[in-house]
Amino acid sequence: MKDKLRQIDEMFLDLLIGIILCGVVFGILGMIITKGNLWYLLGIAAGTGAAAGILIHMMVSIQKAVHMDTNQASRYMVKCSIIRYLAMLLILLLGIKGDFACFIGIVIGFLGNKAAAFLQKPIHQYITRKIMED
Image (cartoon, rainbow, N blue to C red):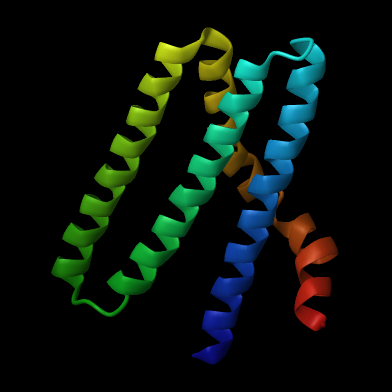
């Protein structure tokens, strides 16, 4: 059981590092493309922070749901998913109010979550494994 929990913690760390790296890379590339638009940078920061928050909320929800019975866990996970979707919608609506570049930055920051999942294996191999060995 401890090995499973350690595996979950390592994957969580892989995804969190991936989200932050993607946010930094997307932020640098976007600042070059938009010629220093601070609204874009604010959007990337908000999207990356929200993606990290969503990941943390998802991991906490999963760890709580594991200790519930099946029916209760299913309802709990649906409720938590709706909370995450509403938080994303609220952040996107605030981005639309700000500026179009901010909205685009937020969307790209949210997509850092997907890119981090895609890059999880190389991140684990080259970064997280070395951190966990120390």
